[in-house]
Image (cartoon, rainbow, N blue to C red; front, top):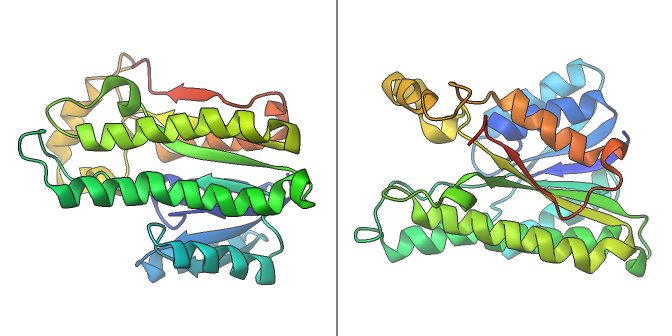
Length: 248
């Protein structure tokens, strides 16, 4: 696997695991981060120490100017993007529908839906054979919440991931003849910072009982699925919503 990969939210959790695995397979990786420069630097250092190529690139993936600047910087420093993993996302906090705020909903949609739309736009402009590109792959990081709805806790988050799945299906058909494959990984409950398990082991223990497999996923397990969808082994897979949820 060679080429240039952008991983949004690539400095921690699933994004870091994807960045490390992809770099080990030959990708030149743009590790995007919003605020944690230290974590991004550590991820890039780990890639370089293993002989890979990576750059840390700051940018808020809810802001159009930042997204455009990210892709332009990748063009200059690594080359035109050939693969994109839309991983940056937020939960929007816990709230029932009768307590959720407008700010929670709009910010969740801005990061989890609008950002990936604009990243896909920039990627297609560079990858599509209709624009002189050589094709490429896009993987959107979705969630099992898109199917389950997250009632009583995060319907706004689930709705954002449902929209991301619709983007995946529609875009996959729109650009299939232009050399671009588009898929989603619908991750199950995963041991990452976004869920705050490090500060709340009781929550981790309770959630571990939910999947039929009796445990939550590791970031490496989710990353392995992403890497497969990026690879030539998935060359005839597009428009897929891959459930990686331990049976949920």
